[in-house]
Length: 488
Ligand code: BES
Ligand code: ZN
Ligand code: ZN
Image 1 (spheres, helix red, strand yellow):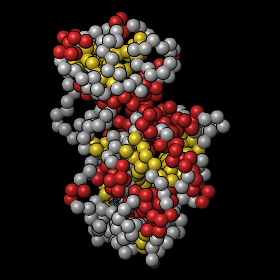
Image 2: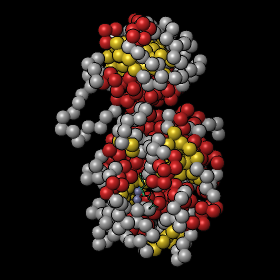
Image 3: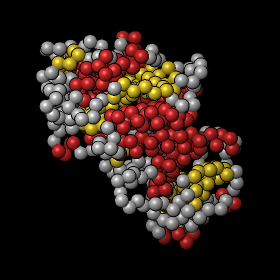
Image 4: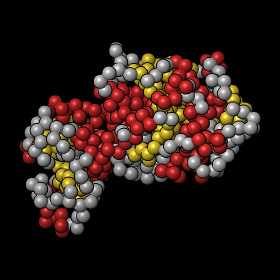
């Protein structure tokens, strides 16, 4: 689907269908020419409600406000409706909530492309949308003056963001039979080639010589050996150096602490953190952000078998800390422990962010649609939380560490235990476990993002389809863009 912006009145643009947003329940706006028909159809103008008037070639979609998060989901809703029809081209006006601020244009483009997405790789009959073209008119719902150049920039950034998110969604949706650690390494290599990134892949031999024993233990029973992937975007004179770390469990069966059947389904999504890092590296490179960004992914499969690591094992992580294993299903933190150590050894970063589908407890705590953000200091946590709903459209809430919960991951026989002694606060105790593997000088520069809730949801929601949402890509990208704009 091609999206362009045309410096022309909406009535002058040729397209099969026009999308009209009804904002603030206002049916008296000049754009709303079918007030009577809408009333007759019983149209209730609350967010994302649609009314398709085929005889008029108009699709009305309601938005509660002109804020970007409302425009984004409404645009996705519009596309989902149009995809079921035979319209080939559509046109839409610009909807800005503030003078000069093009945020809702970018959100509109994001919504259109995110809403268009569907994963059909495993369908023998693929449904094809007839829709080929979207033309955005510079004519505004409110007459704000914005230069065409600024509109174009917003459209371009929206495209980059949505394409990177859809790229992540594709990886996450791929089955564990088709996407295992070496597959993730191949995706990274291909991305590096196409996007001008540096790429280094560590295989078993290198992982052993780097003492990444916790990660290796998790992957040991799998027929697919583990990989650590390092991608780098290195512009000249970067303003900041950032490390992004992702949990890339291509499958999490739970290991010997085997998951119950119902809980195992969807665990192909346990590679969502690593897949988000891949999408982020793509977007950061496509935007050519003036910051140096390193992406590290621990790509591992957690399986059962005679060679599996066990509850009762004590593992020695890369930084020498010993870990008592009491549950092999708390494997993500073991993988991340080593990858965090490796990332810090390789790169002295100004900020470190990790993304992981780390705990079911985070989903219990904040629900399916929100990520939990944790860390030792406010600054990096706030960078992510502030890039949340209003900016990126993703929901992110901070969860505070505390010393009382910290005591629950103490071990009687090792330096730390991989599960807590309490059954409550599991997202936070997992985050505090990770903190054990952050060096002193990086402690206040790190934030952990638990994306277990939003990464994979078995229902459509907002601009997200059933399945992988690409959680973390838009959220962290906006934080990176803000850093790239910062005066240094
Ligand atoms: N990958 C899971 C967490 C998860 C659960 C992600 C649901 C997405 C949806 C993780 O490896 C895990 O199994 N965690 C355990 C930890 C427990 C054993 C302390 C959990 O959350 O139950
Ligand atoms: Zn697990
Ligand atoms: Zn897991």
